[in-house]
Length: 349
Ligand code: NAD
Ligand code: DAU
Image (cartoon, rainbow, N blue to C red; front, side, top):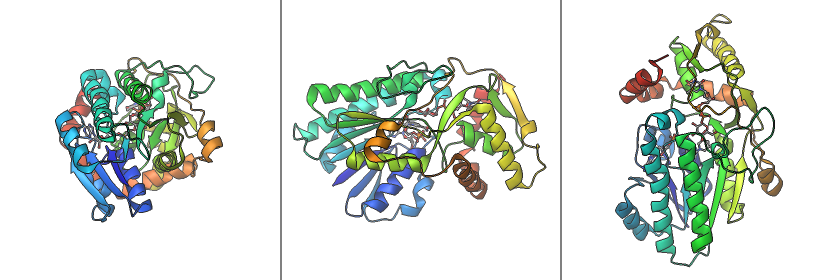
């Protein structure tokens, strides 16, 4: 079997690529990634010379290149993670999200349709999506697979659109697909623009921790390796034409999470209790900020027996340890463009 994983040099993609390369020595695993600011081959250094693994640098927005690539390699499965993934960036530049997340996805769908040519046996287009497509919850309730889509940010609107295209290709052309919608991931290799790695980096450097609004926003956190395990399970045992929610059963208000992070960081850095908490700074809110996400992941649990394998405390501890022992990685990704982004994103606060 020949598998294409897009966005495999990014945060979640790199964990998915590693899992597949190790689990399927007889399958050919191709990782297609443009290496944007968020993509980093350092994330895959440990497996880069494995015989069943090939990296291809390329842009999913380039339809000619994508068609040629699919013709050449005749992929059986596409696991699609490549995307613009950060909500704050989508507020500043929505079109970049329309291009990659919508057009890029449709390019991959068209290329799959073309090479599979109505012969869909053992073929799969697996689209990785987000719980943000459902919009926001109030204080109670959970997102299920049948919750109506109601995206509130340019990022989630672009992901919702790509989900619709995948489903539509299933209905219209019979393309075999699976979509999974996952909650907030954290773990090793996450780019330090997202809450947890940004705050770890700022605590290391004794910089302010910019909490948006009153900090009473809730997210459901899942350790990234558990997401990768769920993706492999759905690839191998999921029902085609279905959507699955994946979540951590692990809701935290931002401010409570940040305080736990501060405590763990003080201990690990040998700093005085309370030192990191002093860095907390309430700043202007994110426009259109969704109040609460929480996933009902009972379908994947019931049908395939999946549940998170680590507790949040364990996952967070592993994550902090990784960033503390990979300061070079952090330094490399936070030089250059990152400084401009940081300056623009946080200067008004
Ligand atoms: P990321 O930003 O860390 O990685 C995205 C990867 O896609 C990068 O390696 C980047 O180089 C690549 N890429 C971007 N544009 C490309 C293009 N035009 N052509 C080829 N490659 C391109 O993202 P992530 O957090 O790992 O998220 C991966 C996927 O999972 C996304 O589709 C995202 O919507 C989804 N998701 C993320 C989370 C989360 O908490 N991070 C949760 C649920 C779903
Ligand atoms: O729910 C899944 C989604 O989770 C994924 O689809 C997205 O790709 C991923 O980026 C993530 O989106 P969020 O917007 O929830 O993640 P982020 O880490 O940006 O923010 C988490 C919460 O922390 C959110 O309520 C905003 C808040 N926040 C974030 C940043 C970067 C702050 O208070 N301060 C910050 O500086």
